[in-house]
Length: 247
Image 1 (tube, one colour):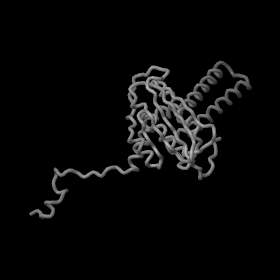
Image 2: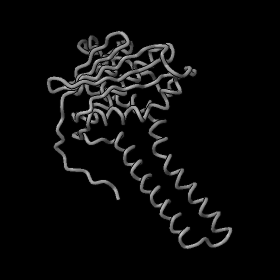
Image 3: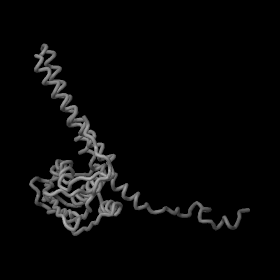
Image 4: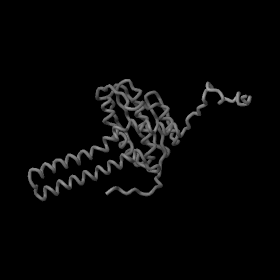
C-alpha cells in the first residue's frame, strides 16, 4: 500500500508539471556571447584564411617557376621572403581570431582602435546587407575593456540591423566625459549607399534581451531609444602582463 505522504508528493505523479528554474544571469549573458560569436563566425573565418590563401597562391607561383627552370638566386630569395612574410601575417591573424574566442579578460584598448577593429570585422557583411557604417570618434586615448567593447558594440549593431526592415546608415559616435565614454549608435533607415540584399541570419537574431544581458553581466550602462542605443563604459587600466608579439 502506498504511503499517504508519497501520494501527495509533487513528484509522485507522472502528469505533474516539472519545475524548471529560470536561467541565471551568468547563463543568459553566456548565451548572448555565444549568439554574437556565431553571427561573427563567417567574418572570423574569412580573417583566418585570407592570408593562408595568399601563402598557397605564392607557393603555387614559385612551384610553376621551378617547373620552367631554376630561377635566379635573387628571384628565389625574393619569393621565399614574400612567403615567409605572408606566413607570419597568417599566424598573427590566426592569433587575433583566437582572441575573439578566448580573450584576455583584463585586456584594454583605446576607444577609437577598439571601435575600428570591430567595424573592420563586420563592414563587408553589413555592406552586403545594405548598411553603411560611419564613425565619429575622439582623437584622444581612452582605454576601455576590449572584451566588453567587442561584445556590447557588436551585439548592439547586430540588434539594430536585425530589426531594420531594409538597409540604411548606422553611425557610431563616441564622446568622453566624467571618466567614462559614451557610445551612441544611430540607425537611419533607407540612407545606405547600397541596395539591401535578401538576408537570413546564419544563426539567430540578436535580441534586445541579449544586449541587456551582456551589459548587466559587466556592469555597463545601456539605454535604447527607438533606433538609437546608448552605451556608457568606464575607463579601464590593464593589470595583466604585457603581451609579446609573435615572431
